[in-house]
Image 1 (cartoon, rainbow, N blue to C red):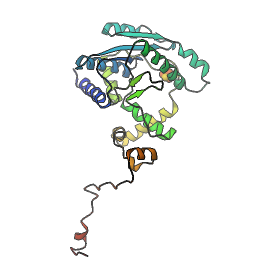
Image 2: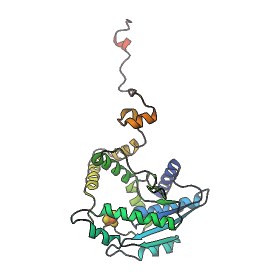
Image 3: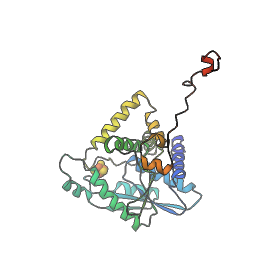
Image 4: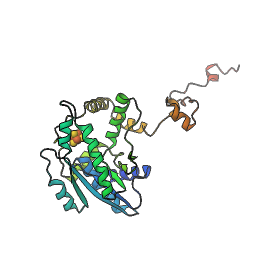
Length: 277
Ligand code: SF4
């Protein structure tokens, strides 16, 4: 096993432990679009399932949305070769999206809503206890910034989510994995990647801007993405303005941050020449 694979497996195991993503007797429906992230997700979950101290099963699901030139044979052949249980679902959401979305607008929002509805139903048909999606650390960071900048909300993508209708639990086991690691892993394992631009939709403009901003900040300070992600696990409610949250946590007033070693002033008595009073 390569060092990269070990690193990714331990990140998935840590996320699972932190957020109760994988539990005894889970039957996890793994959504595989054919991109690098979902391929890595399926592979890593199989490795985790082989090592788990409890029964855990997977079923790979690919949704063929009727995009032009979608290579229908690629994923079934791969799933067969690798011995995965799988289901390919064909629903032409592409025609609906092209018909409904005004020209010049991106398809993604309607496309994802339609996809989500279909996948939720498929999970029920397959008696899946969880639906696993391939979003990773960099998706989480971009979503945080998108929400901060364009929706006025401090939130990102949850690692574990109960669907609105209460029927499904959606999990994101790759939230501690970085996109560059997943890209390198996809190359290392030679996954049969299906390009993600078959639908011809432009990437959401705001997301594009946020990615560019992060790249620019990263050029000055390579820790920026890691810091943003760490901030999601290091929240000071007392220094924020969400009154309901403060009340729920019993936060009344903020306390000053303890000064760091460098910031700590000399003891006043020494500065006053040792005189008291
Ligand atoms: S990129 Fe294409 S397939 Fe993906 S969500 Fe957007 S419209 Fe749908």
